[in-house]
Length: 94
Image 1 (cartoon, one colour):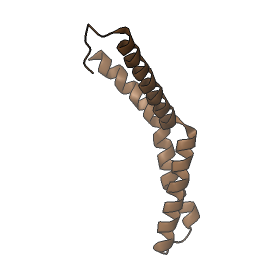
Image 2 (cartoon, one colour; image 1 turned 180 degrees about the vertical axis):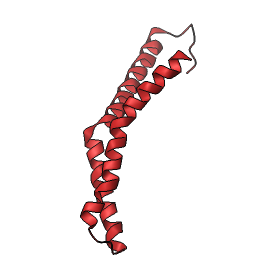
Image 3 (tube, one colour; image 1 turned 30 degrees about the horizontal axis):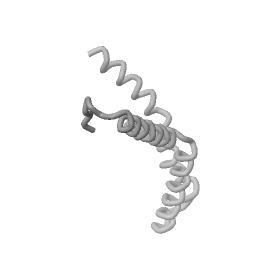
């Protein structure tokens, strides 16, 4: 956005409202990314896909074996925030 020093108060108000609306959308997107609803949905979809693939290739014990990628996903979502904090700290020190 290009701001003009001569903007009238109504234009400034419109810009301010647009920024607040955008910030609200960004915050909702962030909340969704961190939500357990999203994580569990992905885990269920992953489990179904893994079970389907294992059944297609005629593997035994598909319901137990399909848990492996689900647990991998879950562990990655739980560990990534800690890795990010470590990275941010080490980056700030440099």
